[in-house]
Length: 70
Image (cartoon, rainbow, N blue to C red; front, side, top):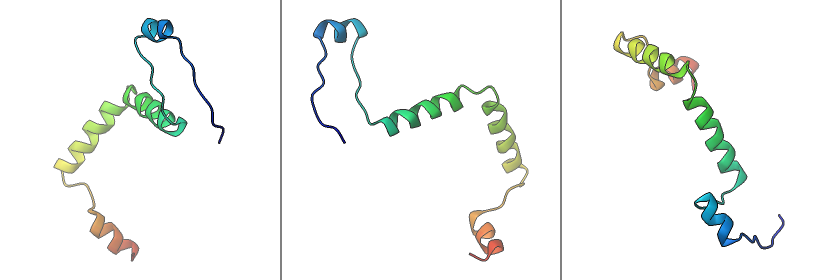
């Protein structure tokens, strides 16, 4: 990994109203989370999943592991 300095002018930081520096993996994860949260399909999927739980249409982790013999 390269090491070095990052130089930002105070003018630019003020103009942008701040700066965030974080690892690229964290940035990519945040981008993916944001894209998923903006999905028009997500609220429907969540509502459907909640309805299935209310109707008892689910399998517990214990039962799934038992079924898979894990």
